[in-house]
Length: 188
Image 1 (cartoon, rainbow, N blue to C red):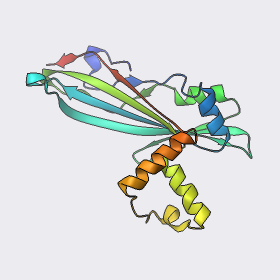
Image 2 (cartoon, rainbow, N blue to C red; image 1 turned 60 degrees about the vertical axis):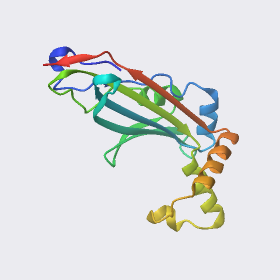
Image 3 (cartoon, rainbow, N blue to C red; image 1 turned 90 degrees about the horizontal axis):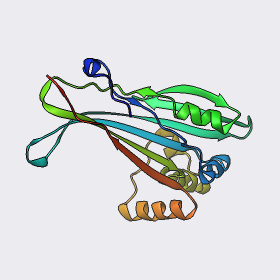
Image 4 (cartoon, one colour; image 1 turned 45 degrees about the vertical axis):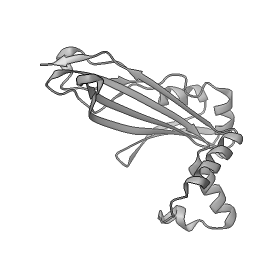
């Protein structure tokens, strides 16, 4: 995460970049097996509070999805923000797909004029073979594709969600989380 220059803090958000997200052999194997990879970015603006209690001032988030298209022998990368999908391209080489995922992205969250010190915090959650994937597979095996199409599926119970999470990890699914906190600054 790269913070904008002091003179630009109220006009631009931080520049966020992920590196080597598809470098792991395990993630590549899951992609080739047909499971999509989701990269969930969340950028928060915090202000330093009194008595060590900081206050969330704002947040923005977006997803980048990568999947392998076996019929085309290509990796497809999409960015989804505010329910809008933007194709970042299709790539024959995994390294090119990785560069698309890791391209610098200006987070649309700007600092505010305040007497308090502020800072940005970035979180990236990488997930392959998620609970949602297992739900869809289970529905498909039962012949029930309607909830996935209409979005009318009932929420799962906490117990079954826990079992699906465990099954996802046992089947080799990946879930990694990364965090970065920028330096504090003041915008008078």
